[in-house]
Image 1 (cartoon, rainbow, N blue to C red):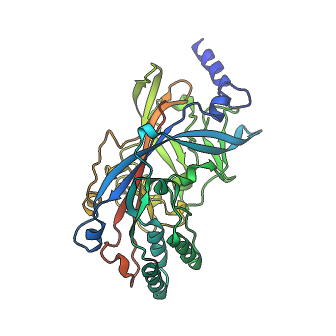
Image 2 (cartoon, rainbow, N blue to C red; image 1 turned 90 degrees about the horizontal axis):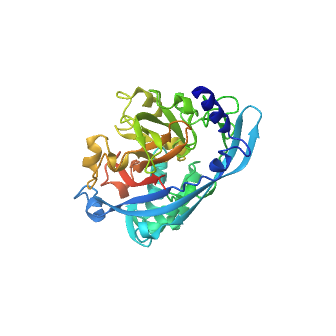
Image 3 (cartoon, one colour; image 1 turned 45 degrees about the horizontal axis):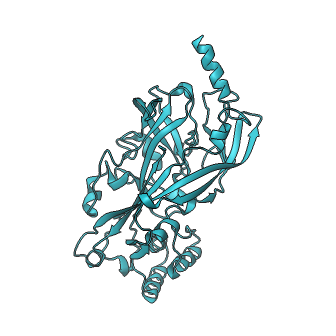
Length: 396
């Protein structure tokens, strides 16, 4: 009778109005802790004179409890459901450093505007140099932690927007590392709700009405990953990966079965981890070849240009864990640690519902220098500067 009971349990899991898991999915009771760690640059003057390599110290964490609600929900006859995500954040003072702390970080609007101007006329680079001197804008600037997280608007941010407009480009406004996560997301996700079977339960079928992305122009545009809330129960525990779709980076993140485990409360779970080669160069992980933009990133990095208006942003594991040793020699002060900087998720082995986990990713920006642009002369073209990293803990 075991199979029959399992069938009945799965039928109760169908995501629809008034089903057993509808309220859990609509307003998840687990409110993850989002911790932001900032790389504070401690030797900017020496680095800009070419006397030393840039050196960082990690500051933080700045921790927020995130509440997620799924809104504008519409069920469709083909066994799918569409929705948007609404997120709000509460600062957790007892787990955090003071948000008023001042940090020195790469000037993201400037570096982005400079990168955009590389392929333009020389006069554009000269004009940008003039603007920098007029506004006394430098490649590194001071921000409070609050501005780093939620965005800062200064005079040069407006100038950078104008430069991008002249070059027929877009730039993100504010540049806060969490600013895109607050409020109602403009993106509409459509997932399989189990009504027509559980092989694709929780898997995304459309993103803003499209069956695939148009970012990478390749296999990497596939959408068939989960939204991080539900997984196909019968596929769990096998050697096949499961995927989480990370819309901020326009890609599916693979998770491989690691081991059987138990939660703190004694629930049996299956632990999944990102494979060690998740950001490896194509020679090591051929699946990553379609993430190359004009050229492939060094080992341990992935470009996110198609998701960041063409700005030279890259993701990696924190502290360049498992990355090319050259990245560590170009920026000093990093300390990669397998225990502190990896990602895992624990999934209920029968229901396919996540019951714990930790996700960690680092944001970086690449120095792209146009000719005749003196303010970046002492920074080597192609240098990858770490900005900060996020830790999302889903254990309550």
